Amino acid sequence: MPAQAEAGAYFEVRPAVLLPRLEGLHALTKPGVRGFPDVEAGQALLAQTLRKDRVKGEVLDLTAMGGLLAALPGVTLRPVEGSAAALTVLGAAGLDPLAAAPGDDLRERWPERARTVALVLAGDRGTAYAMGQVAWAHACTPPGGTLYLAGDRDKGFDRYVRAAGAAFGTGETIARDGGMRVARLVRRPGPTPAFPEPEGYEAFGVQVVGLPGVFSAGRPDKATSLLLGALEGLDLTGRQVLDLGCGTGLIGAWAARRGAEATLVDGDLQSVRSARATLAANDLPGEVLHSDVDAALEGRTFDMVLTNPPFHVGRGMVLDVAREFIAAAARRLKPGGTLYLVANEPLPYETPMRAVGPVRELRRENGFKVLAATRVG
Ligand SMILES: C[S@@+](CC[C@H](N)C(=O)[O-])C[C@H]1O[C@@H](n2cnc3c(N)ncnc32)[C@H](O)[C@@H]1O
Image 1 (cartoon, protein in one colour):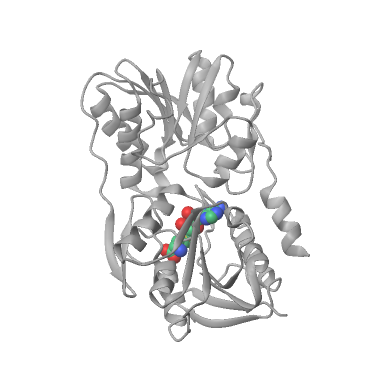
Image 2 (tube, protein in one colour; image 1 turned 90 degrees about the horizontal axis):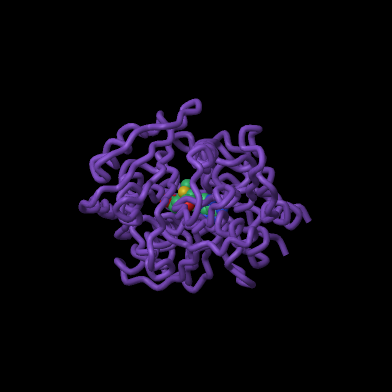
């Protein structure tokens, strides 16, 4: 039962590995959380900086990850996350997190704004997303309140701090560790910067709505295009199809357009909203769930699983999420059902895919391959 065995390990919440300079603190983590198995470097530097500044009281953490800031003495954390994996970990830590994405109004949950706000910029998700994070942090910080903003020098940190400084009226970088930086900004009265607009394009007969920071928000991904091209002749009428890691929802919407009963899942809340907007823009039916891999799917099973799995979580290459995508397909496919997967040529997915059934290569082009495995029985 290799698929089941891996599922157990993937969903297990465990203590994060902490650097000696975070001595006395603790956080939980699991595969799929940024920084796993360690604490993400930006959040680690934030914790050190808040400890040095002796920050106490309510702290709104807009990128709470494994909840490290909750371990600071005297801090009461308001943890906010968009990652389903991180929300699981925060829940396991008893922190009662809020699922939200840049731009969300948090006043329903916390009518009074906290005096201290913390945020790690996701520079790897592109300029529009990071600028949306800056605008959100501004909207969440009351005049006179302080924002601690962490980010990576090599992912545009200085540029984002300049933009934040223009909105806040002040700001300086106060901590450095390798490429990581933390800036402290005290908000003066003034307007919140505008939130970036969604992008949109047409591909494979689908009008795609790409919210900032969502994978291939501005144009179709080459690998996804290869997958859909390879599946051109497939009859999807009345079939139950799972789009695993749906991003903008292009694959699921394409399947729904061809008569499938489509279910789309993504671990990222912004992607879930993007996929819902794509289905709505095309007037297509389909269910979109916010889910760490297949965790939210309860007892559902499928005739087909279509996926372009992730191999990054934040900065590094991480294959444990992709391997769990394959294990989830093995769990969720009905007998005779097929997993169709596209990946970069060198990625070693054939071996885990054998847990589904014998593996066929349908196409190999421009550095990508389309693989299929049908569940026997
Ligand atoms: C390579 S992108 C593919 C997106 C979309 N299917 C496409 O082809 O354009 C992989 C997707 O997997 C999602 N993802 C990453 N980790 C996940 C997890 N643990 N559970 C569910 N989805 C996840 C990402 O948010 C991203 O949207």
